[in-house]
Length: 333
View (tube, rainbow, N blue to C red):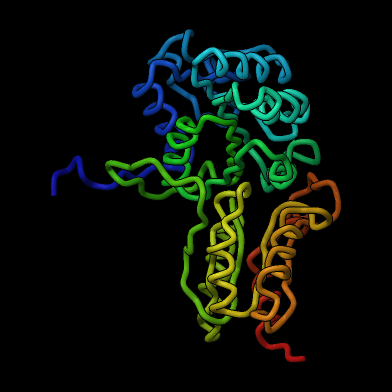
């Protein structure tokens, strides 16, 4: 095998950067804009080095004004460009919610199908980095509530790299939520990675006793839990949702029909969250396949604490996933 055909060892951060770099090289209409993406190299160092390679026309630092630069991204998309807008952490996206929901997501409908908005917005999400209550939100489930957009949650290096290319080809707005704890995750990226489908979930671990439905940083926790449960003879199927809007009902329901027990692991809050929507869909479409009610492991109903031990207690962990699965599998009646 040629050395150039070998998988490349890198971090999730590197994979996302390579995805952006590949898009910039492939299409002159693509550019990156956001706070500190240029000279500073990005809040999470994802765009480090891109300014030197591509220049200020294509790597654009913006003022601290989310509504303004998301609006500029919408305008650029309408004008024929393919903007990648970076918002530091997803809480800051709320400052641009009017642009995202009332303009980007709605314009195709309000124009009678005349105006598509091919805009990609990337943002960091989730807790676990001691960034306290204002910078540890998991709002991807909120955005999955909005018609007119796609919501992606890449949890692997290959998805972190490849989902961007597919998103940039989409004629309508795509939001990509990158869990901030994943940036340092190490792995291998294929030598010639290809664009990734952004309409389906993916089974990451085959099993027959219980289905774990999850996404983002909770995928790795669920896989770790599945490995430990296997030592007890419990075979957990782990499904990486990957796309929260539109949800891949078919893959979810196939797994439910196989295992008859479901645990949803979601770093978002339980009340009104995406886990509740998934649970409702299973109840509506596969009620008689269930041996037990659908269960959930979610973030505690509190602002995410700064203190490390409290932050860990507030978020789903391997131990809480294992305990919930054991209860599901071993309980009767």
